[in-house]
Image (tube, rainbow, N blue to C red):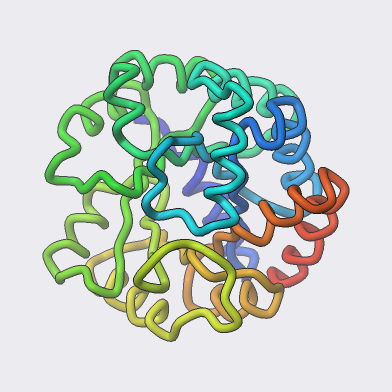
Length: 261
């Protein structure tokens, strides 16, 4: 199996003495073309890896900012095929890893093998699956191996030692450390629980672990990168896109990227 482009991008930043900045935006918000331009702007302004969220009708883990954006995309007619189109169009303009973040039900409905094939053909790096646990991921494990796609599983403060080990052994690219219990969204302080999750993942053998949920400032990015391999920002970027379009996303990305220095 080839080397993970996601893990390589993270390792490059870690070896440079910092860590990776990962940015999340939903596909199709406020429309498909703008979401493509916004993702490109992230990479052009210091973001190392992009997570593209696939809008879904029951986004149980998403905070209000992301929920509103994904619901708007669905009302605008978003389809899964547009997700693959977006990946292909972004990859044609920038050379950076693109991970798709999706709930598992749309993948099942589309067909796991078909989804993996189309994602690989579009140039995607792999999937983040927030509601899929490794025990129930047999079909995805096989398809991702066959198509050399990364698979990112989550670890939370409530995860048992066995779950931590399972997340580390099953993930490829990185393990997504959820810093708080609850839904996504910017917070004044990232929970100290994030340090504990990363520490426990290290004990379980993780060599690539990134923190998400609640990161919204360069200072928080810098703090997270003192102990984790990457910092993931979502709601702050989605808010910027909603309020000021692509220029605002570019400005916030550049601001957040100062936290890597």
